[in-house]
Amino acid sequence: MDHKKKVIERLSKCTAGEESLPLPALTKASVLIPLFVREGKLQVLMTVRSTELKHNAGEVCFPGGKSDRNDQDEIDTALREAEEEIGLPPDEVEVVCRLIPVLNQRGLLVTPVVGFISESFQARPNPAETRSITSGD
Image 1 (tube, rainbow, N blue to C red):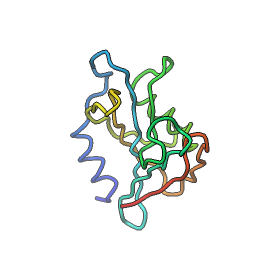
Image 2 (cartoon, rainbow, N blue to C red):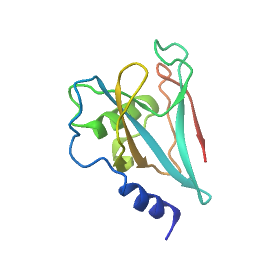
Image 3 (tube, rainbow, N blue to C red):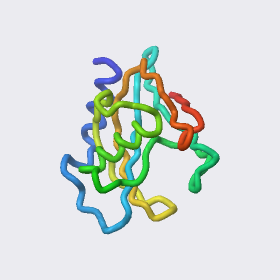
Image 4 (cartoon, helix red, strand yellow):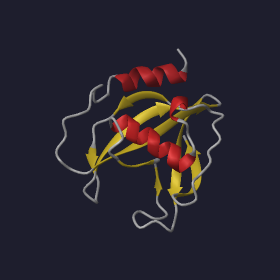
């Protein structure tokens, strides 16, 4: 079994479910944890936030942000934000699972969404939100 299949098999056991989760009435957000395999190693793509942003400026993070009224669920939010921040088309993400939401320091309920992207994906950072892109294993 190849590396990607092993990861998908393991993560599928961790999913928070297929339907929207019944969460408290807090402001919701989602992040995409974009994974890919390069030279046989599992890699994760992260962003460095613009230093011009009001919150979390200059921090290394996953692409993501607050839910908006047009998002159907946490996955929609993560995919929309990834497209806005790094130019990742939603149809180029193989969503594997949603992890259990966490409460961040600003009081947002953040749902991590894990998905695989192509090793050849070429990010197009939105300079208003993203200073640079990085990846690591």
